[in-house]
Amino acid sequence: MDNRSKMFFTFAIGVISGIALLKFLDSKKGEDFIENTKEKSLEAINDLKNKIKKMEHELSELLVKLSDDHSENKTSI
Image (cartoon, rainbow, N blue to C red; front, side, top):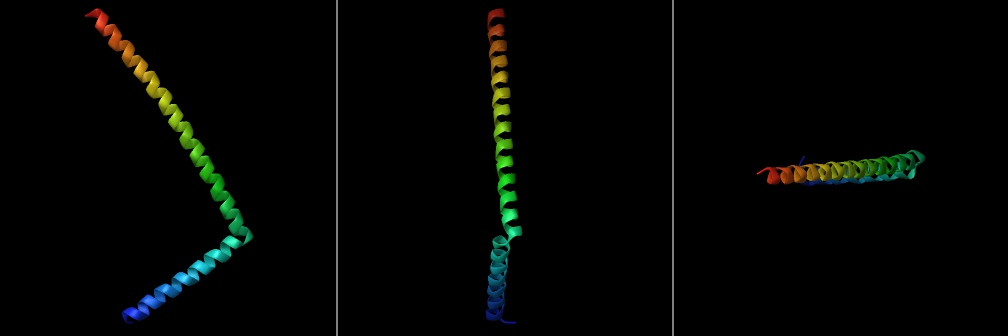
């Protein structure tokens, strides 16, 4: 198989795959897949936001503790 044949074959496979994907996404199962993917994405985003808020709170508490420790060390010197 020469390079032109390989390139044509690769292009044809890509077109066929694209058409199959489009048909799938256009079907009821495809719509369900898209909806499920959206829901999972939103869950992941909310989970990430909650983890960031928790980390911000923990960091804030740590900074306050370090500041208090530093203040105590200054007064004891």
